Every structure is written in structure tokens, then in C-alpha cells.
Image (cartoon, rainbow, N blue to C red; front, side):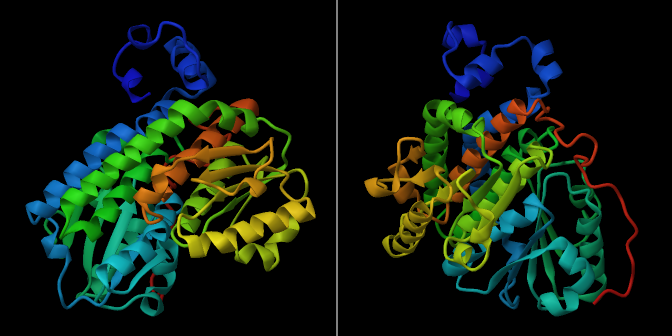
Length: 405
């Protein structure tokens, strides 16, 4: 599946048989006119870029490039970003905290801009995730902390070599920059490969003592994502075109971050025409379930942990009894048969258990991207710029006000 980014389709398969193949074999002018030339290729390139990102991060670990970011005196790690970049932190925090045995929290850059004094320790490691590195919040937070929290250390993980984060702080000893490959700097308005590669790079923070195992997990994730693209794109395209009016994404633990990102992708790429909800399985009962009815689509990222999965399966059975979300997309492995009906799409990935829930958000995000992409096309929008002028690829500058606490 990944190979036809690098060679003519005719050399791989002379008769396109899948939705992705048919779209990628259209003339370039048609792809540009339909507005998906960047988004689709950025989705499909993810498995290959993950392998490269893991190799790059491993090299940075082994060469001690990241050592300055980990001062033993630092009290915890704060993961930050805006929008999708914040959801990267939510997809990482619990896993990193368990691996590093240090407090890790995900805090939106906007919250840090207005309330950093009460949000984080003065002597933390602040990890900023950024596709462009040019958003107003990113620079505003860093400038404020460099001036007012001199004991903080900063690690920027970014995709843009020319962005503010990558270029403006080169001579600041408290700052370390990890610049990912240019291919990850998505040209589409929506973040796809940038999201997953930034997340994978962030997972590398837990790999300082075992970079080889980290590369192996990235390779397994790439294999699973390739399988999703090869085997499940068509069923996901079919269900994305069905007559649902809202969609709920469910995830537990770090997979809730992937649920939030998937909900944002659908909201952005449908131009707001599909209302979205992201919630934990257990949280859904506490009010948000009222948003669901028989015409809702439910996307469930099902845990491999038996104890967690038991709670999740109970919730899915409850939805079935109540006639809510009669169409579902289930992502997991060896799911109980009584939770599945013949209109559901089951993305059955046995290797997901070996990957572990901490890295599963990589796969969850790909599923969410495909659903949003095909819904966008079904609505007649352009995936590369779907929001009809409401959003821009980089948030435009706005006034930064002093005195925030």
C-alpha cells in the first residue's frame, strides 16, 4: 500500500481495485480540482514515515542530543500544543508517566498562555508539539516561561525547519529542538501524518533506555497501519457515506486522546456538518449519551487490557440495548461476537495487543482520518482545505496580552 507513493501505479497494480488506488491514479489535475492531492498522500505515507521518525528519534537518543532536556532537578513533564497538537499530549501523558515514573500532564498552550503560573511547576520540562511552530500561543508561552520561569527546560518537537520554534531560539541553552523530516510537515489544512509522527516522536521520550524496542514497536505500528489502509479503507469509506447525523468517538486512557483528535478531524473535514463527540467509555453515561440516537455512528477504540475492555464492552452492549448508535466502527482484536452486528465495520487487528494501548492511538488516528476524509468527499468538500475559509492551516496572529497568571 505504501509503495505506490514512490512509483507509478501501473508498476504496482495496473487495475486499481481499492478506493485509495482509484483516487491516487486519477490525473494530478483532477486530484487538485477535487482538493485531496495533499491530504490523501499524507494519510497514506504514514507507515513509511513512522519507521523513519523512530530511527531519527533513536539516533537522537543514542547521540545524547536530547540529554539536556532531562535535568534530574526537573519536577515533571508538561506536554503542550494547540488543537491537534494538544491531543498529541493527551495521547501520550499516561503512557509516559507510567514509563518514566514522573508526573506528566497535557495542558493546552492556550491555558498556559493565560494561566501558566497555576497550571505547571516552575521547574518542569515543557514539551511543545507543533507542525508549523508558528502559532501565536506556542511562541507566547515559550517567551513567557523563558522570562518568568528560568528553571524550566524546553523541548520543541516540530515538523517545520523554517518555523518560529525551530529558528528563533537556536542560541537559548534551555531549549532543545527535535526537527522531524520535512515530509511530516503536512501541506493540507488538517493534520494527519504530522499528528502521528509528532506523537510517535513524543513516545520516544520513554525510550531512552531501550531505543531498539522503540523502533520495533514503530515497525509493528507501521505494519498494522499498512493493513488498515490495504484491507479496511473500502469498508470505512462505505460507512463514512451512510446517513448518520452525528458521530461519537470513544476511547479509554491514552486512546481518549485519539478519540478527541478523530472527532476534530471529522468536524474540520465535514465543515461542521457532522456534529462530533469524544468521550471515554465510562464518561458517556454521565450525560453525553443523551446526544446519541439510532442515527448516530459510534466509533470505539477497544482496549487490549482485559480489565479495561470489560468496562468498554459493557457500555457497548448497553448502547445496543437502548438502540443507540446502531452503526459502529470497532477497532481492536478478538472482539466478542455479541457486540457486533452485520452493519458494523470491525477493524480486526490481532497485532494491536502486542503493540499495546500506549501506542494504539497511532492506529486509531488513521481510522479517524479515513472516516473524515471520505465523509468530506461525500459532502462535496475539498479535504486539503475543507472549512470554506473559516480555518487556516496556521492560526493567524492575534494580540498577546501581558499579565496572565
